[in-house]
Image 1 (tube, rainbow, N blue to C red):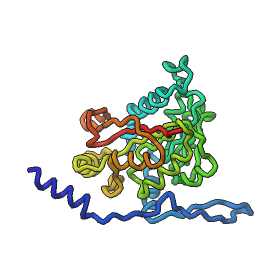
Image 2: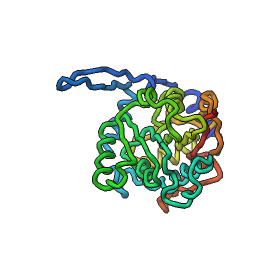
Image 3: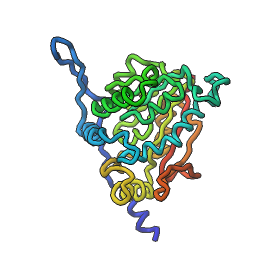
Image 4: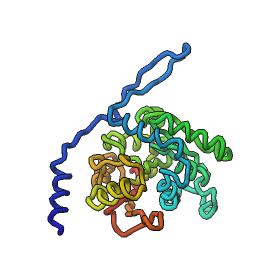
Length: 294
């Protein structure tokens, strides 16, 4: 029974052409005049534009708790404590605030690929100062509207920008206490280039947090084929095998960038309960924390 799966996995790992686009790290930036003022516009690769367009179609229902982004809302139950505890474990927060809703006070956090702001707002509710950047205009508009209408109390803690990470990194070198890339890496072609810019924005001693899918046959079957086409956990064509990366691959990139991985946890989605849970394996999805060495 295992033989066919092994053959399939070998074909997927070895026989599938590997197309690397100079994606986010090689976006071209042009200047254009609009109403007499210079506007910065970004042109993207075909692969990147497809990702932007796909998520733009979901923007109207981004904050629907029972809509297409339901699993992302549910994921906050795991990823918010993971990020919170990872930051506090570094001893950079006021000890008096650890068991309060202000635990991340004065922590500057960058969320790369923030989408409509589901995680951004959750971190801001812990009193962090969060900057969310994304390539998609539609999702940022959704994020700003939700902040304005439904979470005005967080307006002083949240900033949204339609901006590629490499552009943002130019003015924010060694700036953030933490960088978050949650459910983003599986949409990136040039992971090394992308993570390079993310790490550049991080202060020495700061943490980068990543949650993403592993590149395994169980994930491909359960997390993509069944999840998108049978159970409707994620919209169809959201994830693609050739863009997935193993924890080891990500750790190697981060190590080359001067970051030490300190924690890796596996997690998966319970379809019946519609909830995420931690598991003792990285076979499906994983959450990773790495520290930028001083």
